[in-house]
Length: 58
Image (cartoon, rainbow, N blue to C red):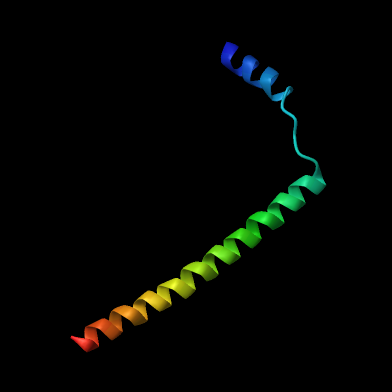
């Protein structure tokens, strides 16, 4: 029980982000995921083509 009481007491000290901050950080995370996905897609295709070209050259 002491653990639960202490946990709830600590939660009262947490500074929660505002709605606008949450929106801003959510958009930043989504954009990062999109750009990282595009990065992986492009370089995966480039290296895949390079490997296929090396395979055909040998």
